[in-house]
Length: 635
Image (cartoon, rainbow, N blue to C red):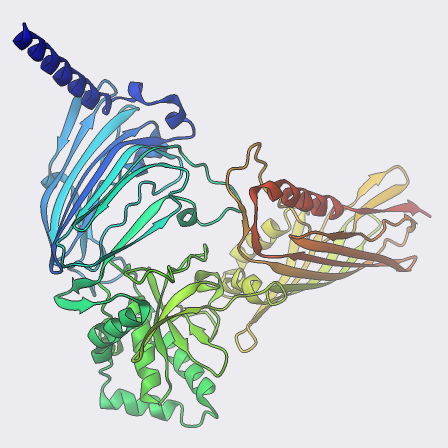
């Protein structure tokens, strides 16, 4: 009787375990709340990392993802980067239909195997194997199994359960095992409020998180990396490309990078050194010399894309860039540094998270971070920052690609965290001056001058090299509220000395006004109406973040049709909020001319989610006031 009871219990356990496992392969078992807003659901993501020593690491991953619709295909993430330091042991995929039945088995040889480099071959040994699968029917489930061994231990995968919007997580776990003689540092981010289990011992760290609901993107929200749960790891003792190091803080990290990865790459030939010294010999100061060298680099080399962390952290030798005429961000930055060094100018290789999201390096967690490299030139009390991959940006202008964020500046003395240039609203200034004439038939003639600086310059400097046909399309789109528009002339001046873009446009438009009986209604804001109203959210989930502010100042003189007089003139308006301000001044010069002045400012900053409705209301009110009209009556 006892034996029978034991066997029955064992049978029940095996049945329940089998049923539980099968449940991971069908969408029927996904909780309704996990399906809400989700294109895919991670059923299980199990990562096991064995750090056998500072010179060897084994990484194993099992990832089961149910894809609910076509948009969820990207959530599979069935790929593996590799190079000469990575030995792939397992790489396979099983595809299940919605009833949990295997419909396809994909082995390593069936994965696409391509270079991880685009636009060049400096790092041709860096490759990626990825799954290329076309679904026949949705939902379906993918099981991705991978295992690889590497002697690069500088990069320890983070515990990052969520890596995109519209993705729910049923269960994600992470185990890091290591010998006791290794010192492991970790940093938790945004894990409060989630179902987290963790266990930390002298030789093992374990994290598990369950039931993370899909996040919908919301306009004007913080960086995705600042709202999702994540745990970062780093070993004090590690090896990269065969070089062993001990690093615990950013100063030590910078010292290691400079001496082991950068110092011995500045091998310019004697001829190049003489050439660059001759190039700057008549320049009056170091800034002028640096500017001349930056322009020389822009004219000489071209950029190829290799991601930091894929193509390696060591920059290509300056002599090779000089010979080839191309390189990635590391190579071009290092080449510029070497040229500056040849004329006695100090500059520093700097690691950054690039992109318009303004993501900063974690200043309290030294380790392999960043995806891009720029150059820092100390200049008295103000740093000069150079984007060495651009052939168009003016000297000292970095725009929204690397502005306003913490970066690692590396010198022979070590590493330190510095903050890149922040463009305040007054610096990101657009000034419009216009002369507009309204004719008796309601048509419009306009002569416009637009001057843009700061981030507003960044938004437009590329216009200088656009063909005339594309410019015609651009301006008709910019002033899309003006129907029947015909452009007579366009003149664009890109002043790289002052970092200003000046656009002079002459255009006309038929039927600009609205006629009602013997009256004519004329919209006073001819040249800069706000058409943007932030999206509405019934239940805002994320805080409000305005990454960059700006300032618009418009002054337009409007000549009225000779057959009409002013009947009523709208009053000027003033709006003041925490998010910005809006001021209009409207005055009649005489009965035939009106002067329209407008100042619109948006402040950058972070605000609680409860403020979003007021922010949206401010934009709506600006849009409404931008449609203010003057009533004219026929003489």
